[in-house]
Figure 1 (cartoon, rainbow, N blue to C red):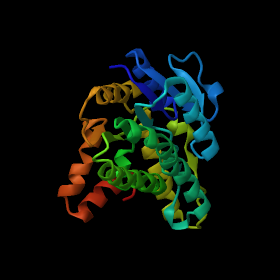
Figure 2: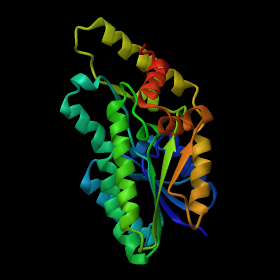
Figure 3: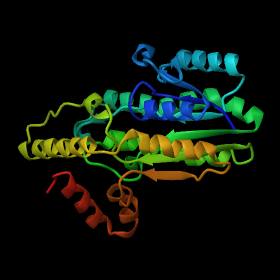
Figure 4: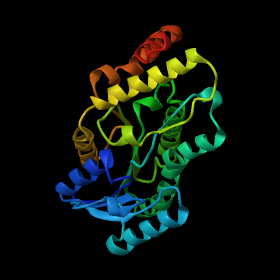
Length: 269
């Protein structure tokens, strides 16, 4: 059954791959970007939307409803990354991280869900991260924003139990996208050579992992399968086995050992 699908953050990376794959299956797909000129030669319908702006979101949703009469599936993919030391993190930078990654999800979902509820059917797919299941050193704001998506999605699923609207969460590992180059780095301001060295080592490790990450088409294929399901699972871990096993390790290992393993990986000895 062909569906009307909205994918946020579709100008590059996971969003572009997802919108393209869904369109190839015959779905009517709208892919958004705050700068729609970045979406070129798309197989889907490009749509301007800034997930941090209420008017922009509402206008974009209204355009889809006017053209299609409904939205069957929402893929909340738009996001960004900020790295930096939490122990000196300015609140305004933290707000910037949450404005896109978390409040953007709420803003778009709240604009789409009433229509789904009215039609008694729909699917919301929230793109979280493996970092939403365990903390990462010097990616704490990103982890926190994704942890927030986990709690939001779990509670939303409970509220929508009797409406016919489903909620699924995807927890991707590292994928090779523009996310690495677009990451914002908060400044290191302490006069502390040891901590500065650990910060730089952690950033180098995360960028190395991303540089050898999986192809975004892998995630797009998983989303296509989820869209086709009548009863999607609550969550999906997508990525290399060495990464998707980490939530299990966190559950079974003593906390001190898990922290040591994570810090060792990120160069914090």
